[in-house]
Image (cartoon, rainbow, N blue to C red; front, top):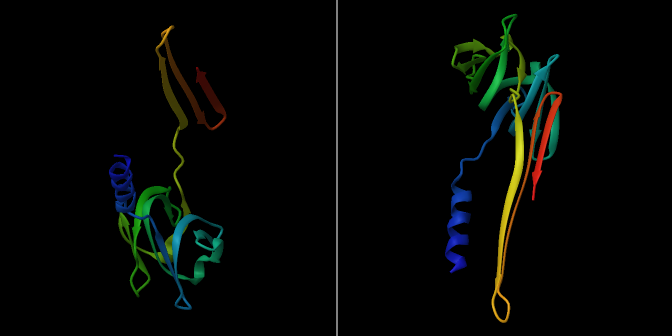
Length: 156
């Protein structure tokens, strides 16, 4: 009985879309992974081999499918997804439209207002015989953080 459930769970996990950004460099290399940031002319990128830092001037195209805070020129950072560029050095910001790749001066992952992690558990024990015993156990743990505030709740 457990095998069909496990099989369905594995199929569901395998069907989830994979998240991967792509960077193309002047030398023709194509790197897939996750964009961390662009600051001070250096792109920080996490690939299978580890964290890479590369000069932004060496990047000819970038595609980022998760929301980033994109700074173009001297304007304020704007949340957008970056669609792969073309050979003319243009990328498309969604929302925002086409912009020169060289005009992008900063990229940053948006930070959520609150980070919440936790878990819960439950257990029931029931025995019968000369004495009948019923036990129910519930437990939970929750940690919520926001910049300098941390709230922890634990119940058992």
